[in-house]
Amino acid sequence: MLAWERGVHRGYQFEDGKLRVFRDGYFDMLDEVDTPADQARAVIDKLSLHVRAEAAVRPAAPPAAAAVTLDQQIQIFAQQHPDGFAGTAWQNHRRGEGPSRRVRRHRTPALADAATRLGAAALGAQLASGDAGAVIGSAIEVLAATDVVTASQLAPLRAISPARQADVGHAIHDLLWGAAGFDAGFDGAVTTLAKASRLVPSWPLVTALPALVHPTAHVHISPVVLRRQARFMAPRFDLGAAPNRHAYLRMVDMVKRIALALTAAGLPPADLWDVHDFMADTLAPKAIDLLDEA
Image (cartoon, rainbow, N blue to C red; front, side, top):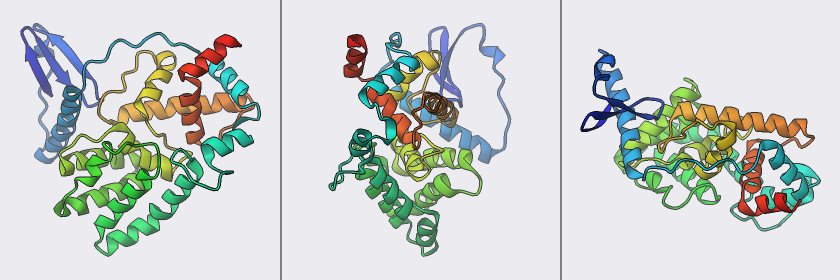
């Protein structure tokens, strides 16, 4: 899709989330595709979402060189948590197993909450009774009790009008439990939420729900954390401003490779939330200082 034209250059938005720039002389190498109207509309909606998202953010500076390698991250983690993910320190601080009072960073109560309120039976019953608003309400309440989305990132869900609740409720169900599979559910959720709220949904909002409901299969995309990790594991990778399935699956693969490396080092994570928090902790500036001291 043509996103902009500036002098002899044109920016074309691609379905993989990337905007590529072509110079005059190469435009005719792109062929217009004839496709049925309903399919064309879906593609246009998806590409328009990416164009709006890219326009809403300032151009990113070139990523800095990676400060650490994965082996060094594992070394940092082993210094911080000699007993690994199963140790008391990690379980208390990150999983919330020891403390009696839940705080927003605790994963175990968040996963239990999501399993109960966003399970297939619960969402199916709400949709069957015509109460799609309850599906949206459950998603908001589950997410608001965590630290994985901000209040502004929840805005697209809170902005749904009663007339669009059915569309969004079914999109949430299909994202988590759809018979058509995750790929279709992901694309449908992004497009439906953007059209219903007229806001661009963020990476954290779209990925938090499947990560909470399916923590061993799906990854919460915190853009700052994942971009830092990708600096040395996928240096040419561009996450993009708007959620897109191609970039998401690439990040899932990267996070699962980290899980395998941790397991090989004798530090098996319980799920991909452990890996997410491992990345966040070991790539923090204070963790780099710990490596320098060591």
